[in-house]
Image (cartoon, rainbow, N blue to C red; front, top):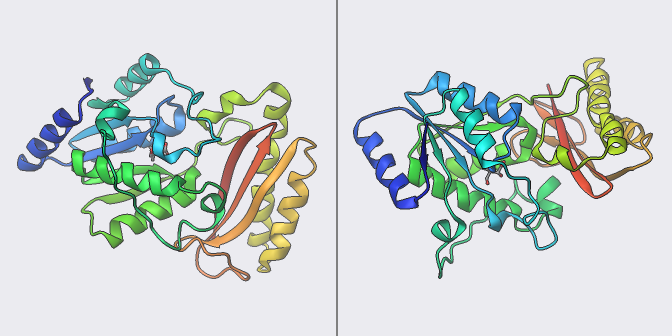
Length: 280
Ligand code: PAF
């Protein structure tokens, strides 16, 4: 696997691959790779002529009180893991190279960014959209891979590339979970033993929602109340939201039609975890 550190070098390779008609897969990440990321990388490796995995802790998608400074990092470990699953190039730029002095563009994908995480993490999706647009322009991938774990991010990226006619196919990859059901996340390292144990209520509550839905329940408020009540059995859980939204528009629904996403965001002693399940 080859390491690319400079934006100019990445742009030159992207142009070369496009001229050679190569099908390129892109896996954008912030590093500290876990099995969830590796599932994206494996899919990309299987479906493309070559795969680029980017590792960039994107400063502009973090709010002032968020965990940018302490976000977990392990570049050597990441490179070994990515190489082992067949990734061809790791693109690891510096923030100053991605956002040089005078950088001034912001982006706003209206509607889809206004609910769920977008409501509490102001500016987050704007930062995600800017960095992804830059990555798409640099790498020129045919396919880009995102986890369903960040279900709203997936919906935002789909809307971004549709609205701006960016010629990349967005592939969503199912959530990868620990054996006990906790969704894999780089932020799980922040959980102490007590929080780690109590965090199991997230997946349990989503399974409860799925059971109710599969049994025919279509009153969103009733399903959400059951999810909330189960999460509240964990004394350390501080709920930020329990919401049922349309899977494409991310707008809340009262009675699910088509595909919907039941999504939760919960803090355990300050560590914010998100999880979701697709219904219908
Ligand atoms: O999901 C992430 O890790 C990030 O939001 C992404 C897509 C790499 C953009 O920085």
